[in-house]
Length: 505
Image (cartoon, rainbow, N blue to C red; front, side):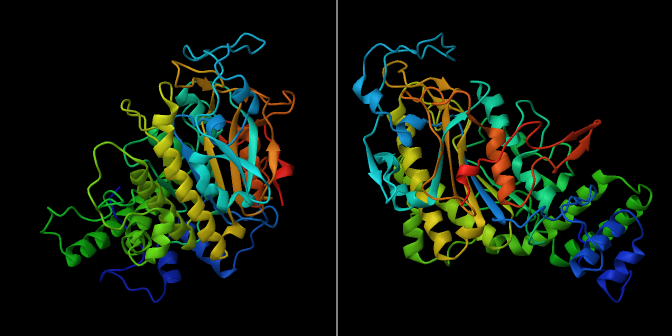
């Protein structure tokens, strides 16, 4: 198998009169798949509603979708719902008093100190009067477009397992991310860009790293493509290294021609090998991205006023070593504006990460020692970027068919840890959603008076419910989007999940 294959430009060895003729000449395997895809685009093949081709991974919705695309924001390290979105007057009243949960609590660390009030003040915003912390006050401008689920429950207080659960629906590695399932179920809307793009934290990966967006047993082309906005080379290995000055456009094109020939010969001997087809598809995509991706990543032509709205610093000054809120605004805002440009150009699913897993000093949401220190810059950064993104999408008419999901692996305890921090709380935390088909101002579930567990412990919300709701908004019945693997019809929601009807407009 060779690199950087492209089936879009032919060399002197053959010159078929059309793309379709070339695909016929290519024979079975990859050629047949590509031809089927082309005929499908032309309407020449009948596609049964909702059927997903197990080879190409492209299907059609089960019913009319409310959204075409998704932007997911993931706060790595576990953001505190109590200090951002879920105001608890009882914690203000009982601040400093000995905590009493009324039951035995299995704490991750020694985090069962006195009750601890929110680190920042809360006040109401919008016509809905939703209470928000002052550190995420920028969201006040769009809070009436947002819906909150304050009774999400997890299964574990361990970062890696909880992150897997929220990202893939399973606590163990080896399962596809939600974006992979969206790509598999619906395909791409732009053949020159990936269906699923991941924008990691600029400092490093969160727990599990790329395994959170790996295609696992789905065809490889459905895995997330990692991009770093703001770097000199946002996409690794897309272009030849600068040290390779001997590589010319002509020699590179000749190499592509040769590799196409070798790939066709290789594929002819391995008809039905889905791994081979997926690998060649990824090489084809890489070649097409050489033209499309740089334009999509270039924010220099965005108006200065819009970049200001996102919190992007256009002076390119050298940031001080000690991280601050302005730097976080720049980094997260840059990811958000690139996310908008990507979905605007047909990317199906964009995942934005905040927080890494690189220890101390903490640049993630795992605030065991000091919530104000750790959450402050990160919160202001994401709130500014998310608010701008929602406003920008709305102004462009894209919010109505783009759903935004904000999540984290679990919440944090209402009791203190070491005086200024909070321990892990997998028993209750917050997600919020916005956009395509979401009822703005809705509350999809409430926590108890402490923010410790769901108010109604018999009716919590789970990640399966969140995933089922996202798929529903995309026009997919979550129980029917399956892939046969090791004798099991696997799906994103496993054997669980219900659409949260109260969130739907």
